[in-house]
Image 1 (cartoon, one colour):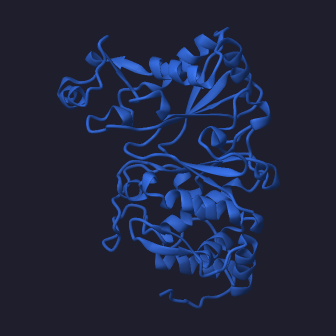
Image 2 (cartoon, helix red, strand yellow; image 1 turned 60 degrees about the horizontal axis):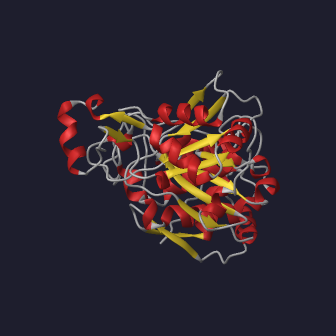
Image 3 (spheres, one colour; image 1 turned 135 degrees about the vertical axis):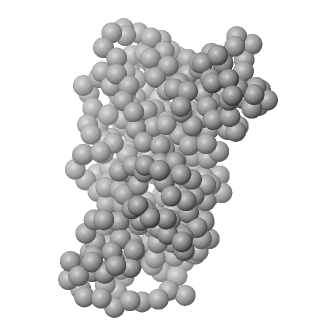
Length: 351
């Protein structure tokens, strides 16, 4: 049962009350009055009592009204409700393993990669500063999802404190995306390949939830061929401290946002996206001798050491998530390191 708490409608008073209750995220929140929440529910096209999913670790029902109340606190555009509801469906999917994402000490949280015409409707960034800093609705959408994870899934995060009533672990570092998440579009119009969601079986408006550990920049100023760029991209991901190299990790995923200029060069020299994924996967490997000796046994038991003595970051090229985004300045692409034992989930957005 949902309890209603009456507080002052003043935004300052409301935010202070959230902080006192341990429900806030450190940023100002708008009061989700019944009238405003009703507007968000209406924008979803669903009934307010409709259960969109059960979110681990709490396994509490996440209704459209609950989603609307959290969205209202961020000032998210009402038109983004179908996207936010689809994102909740995606992270509730058992393949995403939200319970593990919420309970770990690692800095992991969902990123949302958006495909289809809805990118334009909601002004989801896919060009310059698309991973943070671009104007638009992305931060409020991402923040709404993070509030839902706090309030419904049970990830009650308090700085410098492990909440005894929480069923989550204390994150060692966290990251800015654990407040506003990452919501990014794919620049489909500049991609030489089919859109990410279409390659994953869902064309049109769709969102892919991917559990990421932050972002890392990949920079190159000398490569003059697609093959060389793929070598730089792959080798940049293969750090022995990356989660997929943990001894107990049978599978993991990694995402790459490739800027349109690099994508054109790569597509010119490498015929298919499958070949692109294979080459990145093949370069994302290190000699087993690079792994500390104490950690090698379990890796060998999993059969991850190839005949040439290398250990690949990922078990298969299929564990790569590649999409085109970023500004036209070239020089850079972005790596989103993945978590362990979690799979990205793509969900259609029903408008």
